[in-house]
Length: 233
Image 1 (cartoon, rainbow, N blue to C red):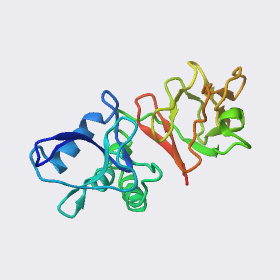
Image 2 (cartoon, rainbow, N blue to C red):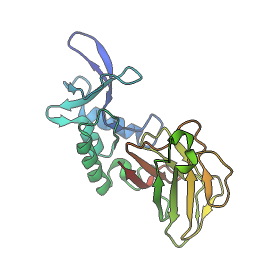
Image 3 (spheres, rainbow, N blue to C red):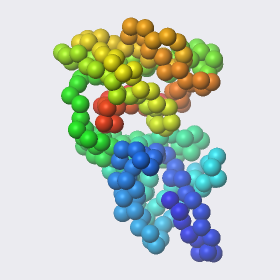
């Protein structure tokens, strides 16, 4: 969001502790509307800092307040964004994480089964996630992996299904035509390799996928709906 100050200057603010959909992504427009509703143009807002002043894009890092209401927290509570820890700016993270639990329980916003379109009928779960490989994660990518199981009774075609991390900057798409039978699991390794059977490779180059300080894995259906999650801190 862009804020104007009493001295006539303006600056771009990055809301601390949350991540909202990028333009063109599912729920990006409703998230923008939610922000505009909570902090309408021309309204007076309060800005407070945590530890850092600016991010790598030179945006101000701030908690935004309208009166006593935390806009950051309310966006998460409405399902218009997800709670994400960005160390060292984590002083309000427990509040945001609690708000997200409420939004998930109430299936609000991004957490609605049909947030991005009709949900796909399947019973898939993220059953395991190894996020901290031995040694330097970036040098040992194939000992970092995520596992998905088909708990249903039917074969599921995973074409169009995907996995992403909390930042949504790391995304994996299952191969076209890949299917998972009842009771089967598929393991997706972070590094490169030749896909074989139910062992697949994300092929991240040079850096690990999962943040050891805390992250959330999202399993998304072909319409982009969040089908399953697994978090760790």
